Image (tube, rainbow, N blue to C red; front, side):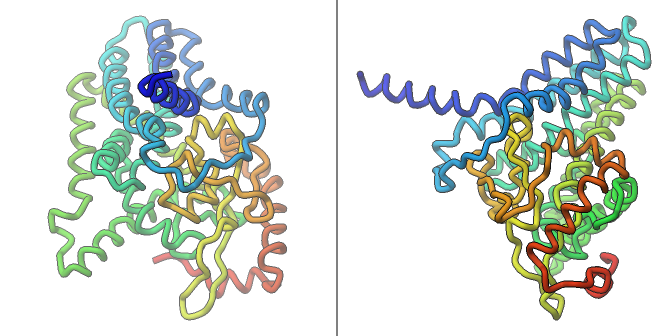
Length: 382
């Protein structure tokens, strides 16, 4: 065997291992098939985005195996390529669909709305999730792709909030995104929409102040956020008129809802121990809910290994480690099922509140009065 053929075989093996994480790309031709066909087929887009991977989770089971966390980035090329390529694919898909669907005579108003509900499900489930992976990387290309993906759903400030606030303050009162035990999604959602924007703005303003710069300095990323978002809004209107703009806003709203549903379940009821003087223990795997369902981790590029992501935020998604119940609390199902449960508060609390109480007893048996503890250390975030 020649050296060149050996290298080719090695690269092919790497590509084969990465391939399942590219299944999300198949949602794009599905979106076009629905747009061209119309009728009842428009419901297939959200159906396949969510329920197909639920069925696959039951079929293929769990994935407890861990890759070597010290794997070099060169060996993760194909995994990184999947996330980078998605940015131009989503851009083309979104605006081409607006151009095609907005004036389409064979599609009724309801069909167009359901179709772009599905587009929002894709851009939230896949697009924002890929942006989350990309924003954690060091290369300018990957960070630019993250900004573009977030701007396409009008949620650019998520990068500032996530990087500067959420990772630093997760499981504490200063983290808007940590859902309190007993807080329903319907209370969480409007709160986080309001408070995350404020906290992101304050975090960037504080960073500039530490450099003796005003908020109006052009290095404030909010100027880039506004520019990108305005560009996409204008583009949607230019190619689709008022109908195109409406479809664009619809998919953005659905994508944001999808993101915050995931945020809601990732840390529900989990808090870091207060050490006094405003200090908290370090972030550990136990401060995020973990899920190791194989198929939904293909769709979500291992986001469900969230315990390890917060423990080691610089790890790329292929080498995120699975933590067992000895180290991290476990969700009973993957995110697709859990987000559905979160929309029904009575079901959610029946499933999750006993797990939160068990988590408290396991990791913090010395805290016997959680009501008093929460009152003492969990004031409303500023």
